[in-house]
Length: 300
Image 1 (cartoon, rainbow, N blue to C red):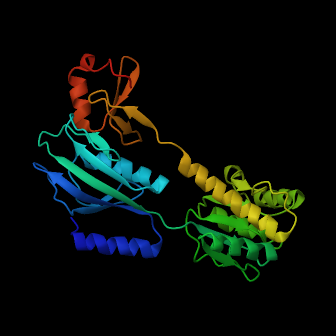
Image 2 (cartoon, rainbow, N blue to C red):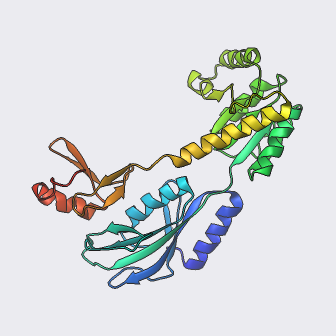
Image 3 (tube, rainbow, N blue to C red):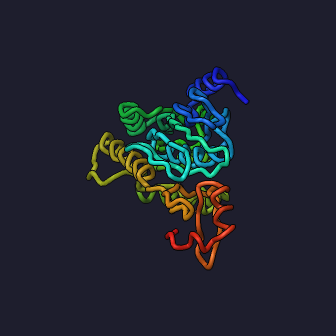
């Protein structure tokens, strides 16, 4: 288990690498609890945890809310305790049925690096896209592909814009696809875009990958100049990013406590009489399975 100092060093390293994570800090604990105030852990996007913020009754809930925090970019204060828990306004209450009892408050602080914007091209519109991206806080990598495309700085999940204007479009698109981009846009006329996609097919690029390429990127500005085209493309990237962040989480009601919980692939669940029920922890699920009829009146 990592000490608090090690957690701080890991967090600093992740920030320097541009990697997202959530710093979870215990800010309050009522005995009997397995953690003390000041305990910290790092929650990674895949749900891995480094550090200690409580046992099996607390950690799954913390992980689910941490992963959601990475999507929204918003901090959250959790209070995990017994069924009769009444958290104050602004605090998310979660029920635990751990026999040890106790109440723990955990503050979740998502650290989400600014998106990387990769622009491939040596054209005026490529320069304009890069300038606008930098102006709104994106980490911009501008690649001049005339002597080959240097892929060293491209991060997985970047927003990639190909603005080579017919010079090396196909090569740039293949490079973009190879890095699992959040989005891949091609600035080109309809005729040129169609030709570029056909050349990718000739190169045996999978059709499902080709389908992810946006050949009409941006928002409708009635753009005419190179700068207006660039503005429309960057605005489209921002629009898609905000829409993804605004998507509401899937929730359910834990029938054993009546509390609302987040639902993802890690949430304990069971099916009873054709209805799927979700639970905040495995202990809650166990209580339900002992006597489902006691709880089925609560909507799932």
